[in-house]
Amino acid sequence: MRAVVTGGAGFIGSNLVDALLARGDDVTVIDDLSSGKRENIARQATFVVADIRDGFDATGFDVIFHLAAQADVQTSVREPTHDAEVNVVGTIAVLESAQRAGAQVIFSSTGGAIYGECDGPATEAATLRPMSPYGIAKLCAEQYLLGWNRIHETKNVVLRFGNVFGPRQEPTLEGGVASIFLERLAAGQPTTIFGDGLQTRDFVFVGDVVDALVAAVGAPGDIYNVGTGVETTVTQLHEACASVVGIASEPTFAPARLGDVQRSALDVSRAARVLDWHARTPLEDGLRRTLEWVRG
Image 1 (tube, helix red, strand yellow):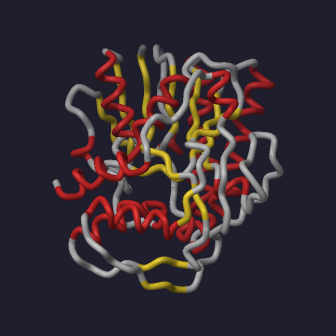
Image 2 (cartoon, rainbow, N blue to C red; image 1 turned 135 degrees about the horizontal axis):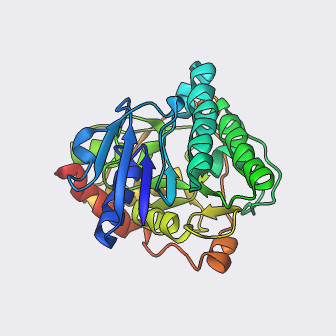
């Protein structure tokens, strides 16, 4: 398989690149290095420094894994225009590149930011109530992919991720809460939970997400939730992080942030049924592997 990975110098993208290369695939990474790191990219991959908004030549490629994004909720609240330029306009440019080449697009979207507040595990048909510009932009991008499927009879796929964690996740953005906790706990530094700590998320290990991305190649053009199907509170996550680090530590609490939802839960039965995929990594196993990366 010949594959393009946009955002391939980032957290999820670089893990995907490694997996594709291990399969023997031919991989080209496109990244502007605005948040990704050159050292994340395996030497066997072809690397092109470029902005996805400018488009690119995808001739000869079978699939484009579109992971390049402005992925921070709080940044989207402060800079909604920039968020839309990257996440909407950038996605349109990727779709146009793929359309010219006849390549399938596998798009990384978000469950929590698109569904908004959940009353229970959200199916792909659930009411969509995004609570941030980031969620709104991702929803717009999804509609472009699905619209392309209707207009051009393509098979572009949308994967709505839970809260992904694992090696190479930078402990700087709010989405990297597991890495933030692990880094600070390992260094003996204080930790902070924004909100009451009872907010729930579906924490899914990056290796399982990579498996879902690969499983989506050639799949029917549709939307699939990618998570564990298990709700974990942020307080429970903190306790699990402290446990794998091997210390007893209590967090401090701060006011909840604008754009954060209280409950996020995913129904992942469609991915299991259609993609023959399900998450295999228990939370604490994934945290241990992430801690190994944090400690270097």
